[in-house]
Image 1 (cartoon, rainbow, N blue to C red):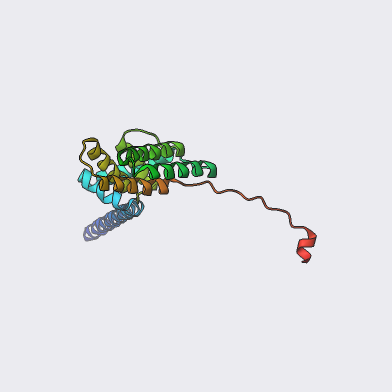
Image 2 (cartoon, rainbow, N blue to C red):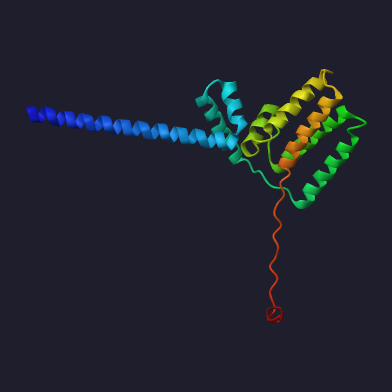
Length: 197
């Protein structure tokens, strides 16, 4: 009878050890997942946690963003397309002095056109910002700051310096989104004469 009690205790101890090991592995996995999301999203991770008031909900939201953006067909620009966008930005920047309000609206429009060309959907602002945060977390705050200034400007509450800041914020996002396809260079065959020299 004493042997049976000892065996029962050994089995129970084994189950407890296995349960503790499984719990430790699960906690380690969750921490690792959280760390990866923190690294990928940077300040956007903290902003999302603050907004949703829950780390678990925020991480679910960030994972959902990743999955949504993975399904999109985001493409780099051809060099000629990038040059066209760059030239358009230079023109609008030159008009800022004469028409700051118009330049902010034009900059926002140009950023939206660039996003559309790259393959980002043009839903509401928060959806666009969420999509951008997946691949460009370092500049999504710039987009939000520019949007806040544009909203204040629509109410007539933004001064010229704030409008300048909005254009600077939009320029940071514009520069980040202006990814260009790598041009493949064709290998030229090496002739025997080139090898001898």
